[in-house]
Image (cartoon, rainbow, N blue to C red):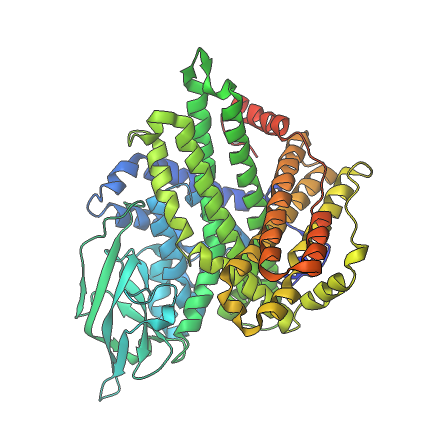
Length: 592
């Protein structure tokens, strides 16, 4: 397997199935680490779901510390700081395993991700020596303090200030932070503030027991009720100068880079929630009878289960493809002499578009899956006594975490276009060639050819559709393009759906060509349904764009081209979904 593609370059190049990683290729050690995480969730967290939601005193912190004793908080931390030093891909698989633990997974991810990674990636030797091993073992717990009442998505609008004391030994820190996960029990805070009259943020390591730190009571939230979420106030808190993280004025960059990582981590985490919700859905539909038949015997329920499975399988395919690409880039940067932190930051930053779109697709897929879980449970789904309640409430935050999905849609298209404008990928060159040759566009002949050849031909046309409008919107809107968010989000959805579909196609093709499963027909069914849905979605997004940018002859020509590029022969999605659902209904659990 090679990693020849740059971030966003999938839009203009063909990808071979041999060059992507699929979940079926996890090795025994990686699966064992994930199983350890799953066992911990089932034995320690599941029995405490209700107690965590009730904020049982000290329970969340004690469970995090138990996880630390088992080494689960240090999976990605280097061995020299008491971690396991595991690869990026292995860490993503562990995140999935913990992702089914509702509020605990939020606390866990906040500690191991945004809580620990700023120090692990940007800290100097002295800072890491002082704090990092304790974070890896759970001796100390961490939180990340970025958001303020007047600064959410626009993080750099924060007003927290740090002023150097006269003796030059401390910064006097003043400000207010809100929505701080783990705030109620964290020992170490990564706090973002502006030094003196700086226009950009700096980052500081602040010990939570420092004089001058006060907190509001726990927030009452719609979901993830078991996680600690507090407002934190800093009143003349003296922070030693040696606790400045990174260089002065680099806090905004630190925050953004950590959020890039958080996005792909969240996409892996929601997989755990998806699979738990599907298993609950299967159990209930196999036990509940209506009109003398089990719910699982009804076509409408099979449709829901089939869709739940397809969205999970597609998300998983894309998450681990991207995770391996990131890992290979990290290894490449390390081989070039980059430090641990520089390599990890650079590896994720290269695939910024993919990280953003995965966060969007994963979180929205989980929302769909848990919503259908409530529907499968019917009236019981609306009862807090059934598991659908917690699944539904806790999933909603994921579309807000790590940057709202609106922000991440804009990041997807913006990061992709910037790569093209900076000639890091030949994006606009390919788009302009396409525009100059619209008359040569051909629809895919779905009646002739090998199954995978047809699917790749359809995918190739979707890639063309996704880049077709880029030069046109630049020409139409110029510098005002950034204000045309509806159009940009249409393009973003086209890019996202293309990547998800390609990842799923390559996974199914690899399973088939390498004979990794005895029956590939189920996987082809998933691919067929997904392809039909994605192609129709891309067609709609494209038409929405055309109506916003063209009229007359140009409009007619673009519409014709889009219809040609998104022309497919309909497949029997009803039977495909039933085939998938029947297999899971028989097994009683998610098996893919």
